[in-house]
Image (cartoon, rainbow, N blue to C red; front, side, top):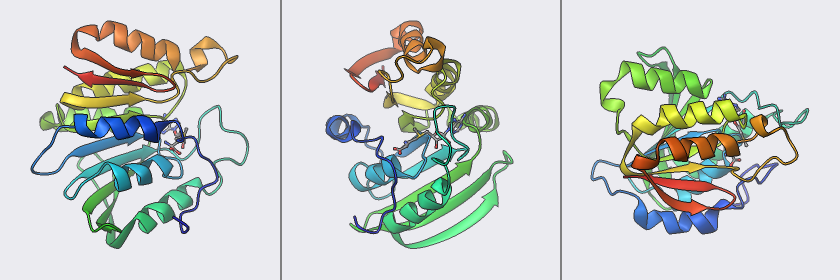
Length: 224
Ligand SMILES: C[S@@+](CC[C@H](N)C(=O)[O-])C[C@H]1O[C@@H](n2cnc3c(N)ncnc32)[C@H](O)[C@@H]1O
């Protein structure tokens, strides 16, 4: 769409694969729940809103908008503003409100209709992923088995990716999908500063609960 503002496309690997995930997603009469860790300018968010979400669905978007160690000088400049703009462009007739959850996390809600007339909610949390995940796990017992789809694309440091995966896993419903981005990313970067060893450790340790769905540039699992 012409009125989106993007400076990067780190998502081009995903659409052909994610199209095949759509039939695997659980169907929830009350609306399905999506979680995105690492939203940047909202390219993956917008694609998810337009192509995966249906009326009644909602998505939590988590980012510090400070960038990770791989982001070069200036790459993050204006990224949060472009995220806000792009979400506003994806959801017309929206209203916006900001408030603090009981978890003391600041949440910006954008609620409205997509161009196709789907009614969706987008919740923006500006914080580290570990802080968001810790608050979800500790404050709401019903957050266990909350999400139908989780996308992990925040910090690319192995210890952070492992932390995101392990903390997000209890929040994923049985039958839900978890996508790890950048499984193949980062050579010749130090092994501990790439997602791959963390993702390998995760699928090995959680093997009893994991069905492998896709292994390519992204690694995608489904919770048994
Ligand atoms: C590769 S970008 C995400 C790209 C985005 N999914 C897209 O499709 O364009 C990674 C993002 O993760 C964010 N990030 C890095 N470490 C984070 C952390 N510990 N918690 C939350 N966000 C983090 C960065 O600020 C950056 O915007």
